[in-house]
Each structure stands twice: as structure tokens, then as C-alpha cells.
Amino acid sequence: MADVELRHLAALAAIAEEGTFGRAAARLGYTQSTVSQQIAALEKAVGGPVFDRPGGPRPVRLTPLGSVVLDHGRDLLARAEALADAVDRFRAGDGRIDIGTFQSVSSVILPSVVRRLRDEHPGCDIRLSEEEPEQPRIGDLDLLFHDGRVVGDVEHHKLLDDPYLLVAAAGTFPDGPVPLGRLDGAPLVAWPLICDQPAMERAVARGGARPRIVFRSAVNDTLVAMVRAGMGSAVLPWLAIRGADVPSDDRLRVHELRPSLPPREIYLHWRAGRAHSPLASRAIEVAVEVAVEVAAELAPPPASA
Image (tube, rainbow, N blue to C red; front, side):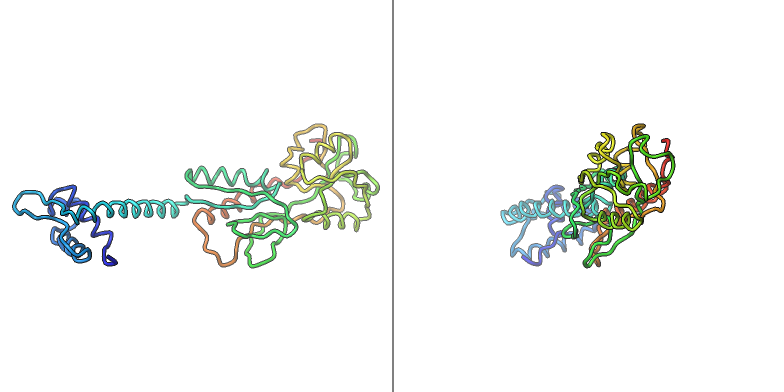
């Protein structure tokens, strides 16, 4: 049975449906002798005739063995057709992709990436997971966004620098850039000490300011709500500010800091040496395109905005 090939089964099905070798050959685009050779090879493989051949213009008929082979052969042919269709769709960019992300990317970059991928490949299956662990791992993910380099056997593409800016309630500081020293002793709401937050707070301290941290939360919208409520100001990266729609809120002001703090760096990672699916390759291209568009907005809005 190892010698049975799909082309043999396709010939068997075509002859059974058309009634003659000649019509089956025309349907399959073969010569009649080629179809006869395929049936001969099939009969040799299964150990007996699959057709009764009455001769003349009368149609051929399946033998009992031929009926058994055809019943199972049609299932194999359907599976092969489904496989070919799945491979075609995979090559066209359908299929599944698993992406790891974090809050700011989820709200600013990923919506555009997902929308473009789904517009181009309506049948694609995009799975997202959002975490902000101290030491992220690629694991089974196809792609991973992170604010920094990920250790391990991974490759990466730096998407953009994400500058830190000051968000304050209107009237807290004069319009325009705010000297870093003005934050010394000032109340601040802030992220927990994970990811890039410790490095940012050390940079603030090196600049001569030791603000009073009055509240910590990992949720950007919560921090902005506390600034709005008067708990204190916040030093946040631009992606977080944009994602929380701060510039459109006339109760808040966005200020540059002088001197400026080192920006956090946004990277896209994937496992080293892994062959990308067409969908994953396109996702990388789209993420880079979207990051370029976002980076073009990075000039901070006027303080009066």
C-alpha cells in the first residue's frame, strides 16, 4: 500500500465519476494511456482489479475492491486538498501569529499593526498577550514587544526612542520646559519599580531631584487620573501619554524636562534563527512602518495644548 499515490486515487475517482478512461483523461488533462498506467499501478499496489472493463462504449464499473479503495481514497484526496489550501493560505499570509506586548505598545502601536494585517489578510488569526515581567522570555511567541533588550537567543529590531515627559495638572508649572530640579520634593505618581522605571528614577536623582512618590500603579490611565485629581505630577514616556490621550485634556499639561532624561527604547524581538511565517514577516514590516509614523509625532505638544 505504500506505493499508492494521490495521482492514482485521483484517476480512480475521475474514472468512477466519468464512466470511461477517455473522459477521465480529458478531465484530468492527461492522455488516456497515462490514466491507464496510473490505474495499473494502483491495481498492482492494492493487489487486484479496481474496475470491471466490459469493453466497447459501455462504462466501466468499480469492483468491490475498487469501491473500498475509492471510499478511503476520496477521504485522502479531500485531506490533500485541504492541506494544499492551508499551505496556499499560509503562503498568502493567513495562519496564526502570537505576539507578546505591553501596555503602551498595546494602546498606540499594535492597533494599527493589527488593523493593517487584518485588512491585508482577513483570514489571519492574531493572538495577543500583554505582560510586563521583569525578565520577559520569547517562549512560544512569534514576536515580542518590550521596552528594552530581551536576554537569550533572540534577534531584535529597535523601533523607536520613547522620551520621558512631565504630565502635570494645568497651572502646576509655568508653560514651557520644566527644570528637573523643580521636581525635588514635589509629589509624583509613578509606575512600580519594574522594567525601565528604576533607570528613569535614578536619572532623575542624578539630575538633582528627589520627588516624593505618593502613589504607584502599573496602569497608565490610573496614573493620569491621579494627576488629574491633584495627587501629583507624573514622569511618563510619550507612548503612555499618547495612549492615555493626555494632550487632548485641557486640565492637563505636558512639559519637556530640562535636562531631558534618557528615553526608554522600544524593541521588537523574535527567536534567533527561526524561519518566519509570511504573516510574521509582514507583521515585522508593518510594526516598523507604524513605529516610523509614531516617531514622527514624538515632538512634544506645546505646553498650552
